[in-house]
Amino acid sequence: VPCKRQGGIKFTINGHQYFTLVLVWNVAGAGDVTSVKIKGDKTGWTNMKKNWGQNWETDVDFTGQSLSFRVTTSDSRTSTSWHVVPRDWQYGQTFEGKNFNS
Image (cartoon, rainbow, N blue to C red):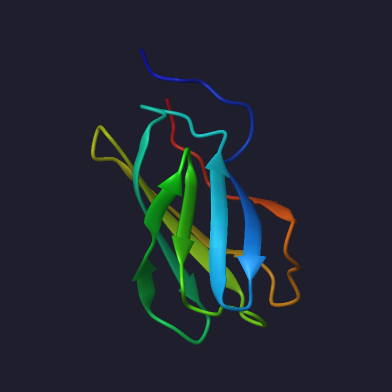
């Protein structure tokens, strides 16, 4: 049964200058995330690795870059949220992207 969610996929940015940790939540559709990619405005797409729960990490420093995300779920559907995080983001902030249609 597909998950229905209000609003878009949420991305909470955590970490430190040496790594970026993103909590991906409020995911509609299948609901279970199988891969996350992140793109800064100065980088190409970077695969993130699952840390724990729905926290995904990379050792790339994205400080000062606008960020986009590509989320894939277990039913092989992909949602791309372009430039949902502005260049002046701070750790601890949450941003909303494009969700899956149920």
